[in-house]
Amino acid sequence: MPGKIVAGYVAKGSEVDPAAILSQAHALGCDLALPHVTSKSAPMRFLRWSPNDDLVPGAFGLLQPAETAPQCKPDIVLVPMLAYDDRLIRLGQGAGHYDRALSVLDHSIAIGLAWSVQFTSVLASDIWDVPLDAVLTEKSWITL
Image 1 (cartoon, rainbow, N blue to C red):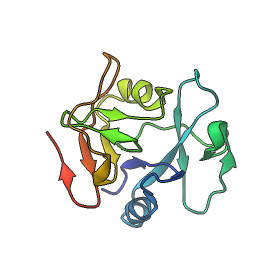
Image 2: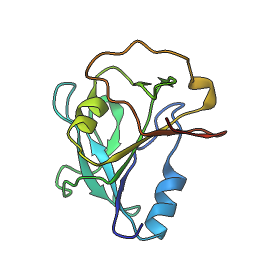
Image 3: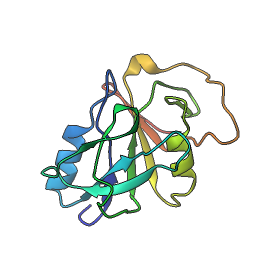
Image 4: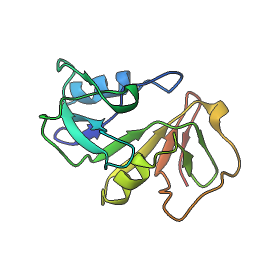
């Protein structure tokens, strides 16, 4: 996977922490990115980041790269969530940032990171909800 761009996030609260995955991807030669959010309505962007780069406080208490970091298009996006279902629809925090970002990232692979207890058989969904390509939990790798 050298040369691929893997986007993660800085875990908040009880979210699954992708730090070990990002560290391993970096060790294998992947470039890394993190989301950059400025407001509820502004599109989320992915900015390049490496483990030694400083992070700055952003909207909603998120830690993110400085606005001056280069924007990029990730090949793989690790996605946080509150819940997921059999169709790999995810429930996020409600602002739609990931759904809007994933809808324009053609050919990017979206992998949800969740705890197995976050599963529910069916979530209510809207036409703009973007299904994940896979979900990784502490117990399993789930695809359709």
